[in-house]
Length: 488
Image 1 (cartoon, rainbow, N blue to C red):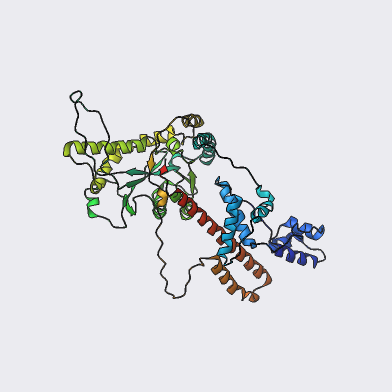
Image 2: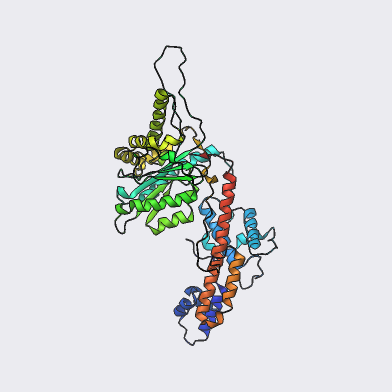
């Protein structure tokens, strides 16, 4: 993470006073006590160096915590290849003022002045962003595969195959068949195979390991938490820990992704020795990158590793033989049922037939070969070069509905035996109000505790403002992507 972008001047002033009050001050001890940089304090006391901001106006539009949060937000977007424009910076600064309950706005030149005083160690400054044809950008992205494989090799170095996992979703449409060749009179027209009306999607979540292991599946039906009894008829062939869930559109949501990662932790604990790290490789879908999802990974020794966008069809083990075989077997089974019985599989028969289909599509040999073919385990640099060349070839576009439209349900408020509202403040104004109440009793604390309390207040304000900016950024990304179909 980048270093803090500014030094608290008030702490430095107090530290300087404390040092000047002593005949032979211990600069190192005083710096630790006040939480300020040793070198800066030493220069102020012994070399009489004044801060660079001493002669600058202090009547800035934004408060210190707001500027600190803006800087963190700029760094975050830079690291995600979404550099900020001056116009967007101005807009988010005004949003910060609005959240603080202020009606005034920053000037049109504020963003340019703010840009000039960004911390030097972050190496931020004006850069020209040009336009380019999207196909050329995609081709250049393929050139990043070699670098991605090098990073992967560093992450999984000396990691056994049983600790390298890949998970993803696979969509099914009940009743979907597949065109095929048959023997009949030349030139004659043969009857079409029946398909049920397409529309409702059923999502399967599968997870495999490089040693050939497979986690019991999840199946997500379209629904609002209501399970139909007919779905489970004759579903005994499925593994014992198969999970059935629902979502409004039959796709994975943020909430279901969190539930799945919790199941993954439980399912793989017995395969993990004390002190070992599990490596979980997945695509960059938003539900896989929520704060709660990543926090569970961190708490349980799981290293998340994402694919470069639009490269899963080249790099992901599941997108190779496993999912291809999965869908082919399902469509063939639909063809057989339609051929002999006249009716394809419907939603109510899906769980009855998907078990045998899954057994044909997945076995240890297929799973191990999938990791090897994609150069994931063991990491194969030559395969990375071959994949970069393949990216120049025309690959059919496969579309699925935009999964980012899924909105996680609002969690219910936890039960409490007290009528007092113990929920954390939801706005910057509420946070400052709570801090003001605590500050009234600060006189009861020692000077050191008062400084520590103020430091905590400052960190909380920065974190709250940074979170608000991150949430607004995510909302804008989802709003922009809403009209588009997700491309794999």
